[in-house]
Length: 365
Image 1 (cartoon, helix red, strand yellow):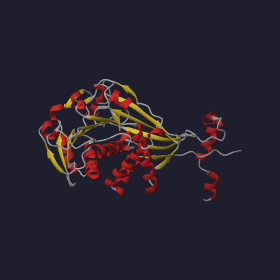
Image 2 (tube, one colour):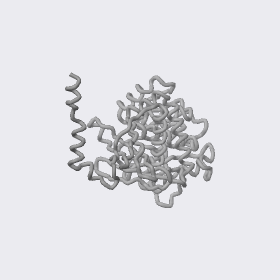
Image 3 (cartoon, one colour):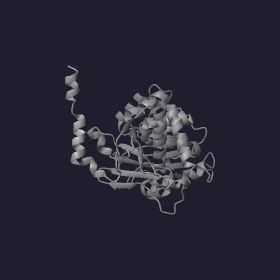
Image 4 (cartoon, one colour):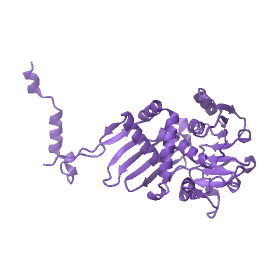
């Protein structure tokens, strides 16, 4: 009789991801994640893509984000519930899977709450490396919640940003950010308004969480040469930028069919011209045209970035010997006989294996 093939899925926890960051350093994590993202975006045509599948409620959204190439299938489960913080829960929680296309075996399972914050910041930096002015040294950070430190540090490490101008309607969020970044070399400036934070900034990052059609950034605040990193608006009925901000800008997106549904782009007609970022990375389209151009990355998060994050976490965990196997797939002597797992004889055999061997115990007395 053929013995069942052992099928184990490697699991990486939040603690494992935090250990990876501590062991190799946050700067290196951002750099390697950015490299993985660039490499995968340069294979854009290799992937089967679709907009994420979303279930909306009055309180938030739950989404599935799938993508695959000829070798691997990946998906992320993620939610967005702004009111969660009142119940002591994160606004965003996520996990993801990498599976083998040839067999369907889920080979890697990982938390993606912490990893999503890392990959979102790395993606923002990859876009800004192409779209922001090379001499950019200051950034306005509008929204100082859970994503904010990651955005600040990714831009610091990967673009050389030296000053962050902070604004949040919740002063405690800003105090939290300052406490978390106190040991860095960043100059942190608390501003009394969005307009004050934005004035003179080279880069403007908006990362707010409220599920509403807001216009926290208006066209009169925008100055020549700015790069706008619109991170927070990511579902129908949730925006951050006034439509005139987009009209004044060269707009770049991850995956146009998804961004037109979820991004600030949802304000504008279907014929409003945008450029997918992969085209810029592959040198098939121009990024920033000149020093005075206003560029805007209408970021909503796309499944390819999660594929990159899962690949990176899998590889980093292997390098450091982290993670543990979990049994998601049953081991069957006969792969056509799933019922054997609950057959009374199988259960009896399992129980007998768990009973102590009394004869051996008595013989040892």
